[in-house]
Length: 76
Image 1 (cartoon, one colour):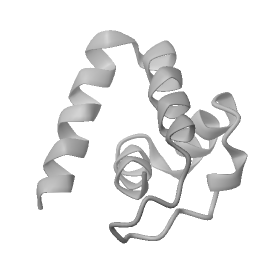
Image 2: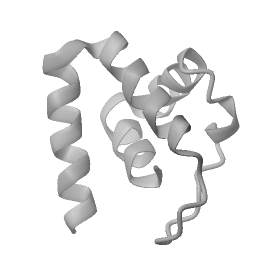
Image 3: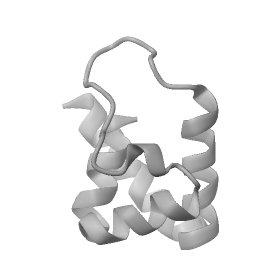
Image 4: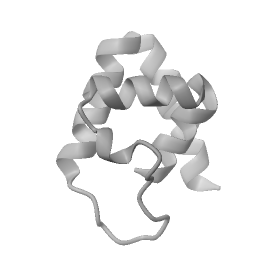
């Protein structure tokens, strides 16, 4: 989840990320990213809601490039 949030912030900026999180009703992650460890500490539903909201906001083409960037960041 942290990689998703950091990548979104790099693309749309901090205010854009705040707008996306508000749209997804995930205000608890504004200025409070989850820890960057390998434990599953966030509900899976939060990640699903985030992805669904990104799809609604940016469409299939927009979210595809975003997901590719997130995948590259996860591998690094």
